[in-house]
Image (cartoon, rainbow, N blue to C red; front, side, top):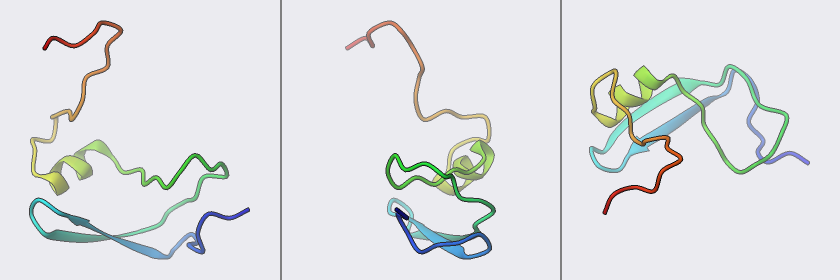
Length: 68
């Protein structure tokens, strides 16, 4: 079962709701599994799109509970 009608070489436009910035990317591949609607981009591209430093992170991987 296909989750979308998108194919390789189609384009997809995403909007950053915080800045109203829109960017369009060409689809370079589609995963053959379905775990929800996902878009995978390089971290540097995502960081530029959301307006944080190239080496910034939006989360922390940890086995410890976060501090309050």
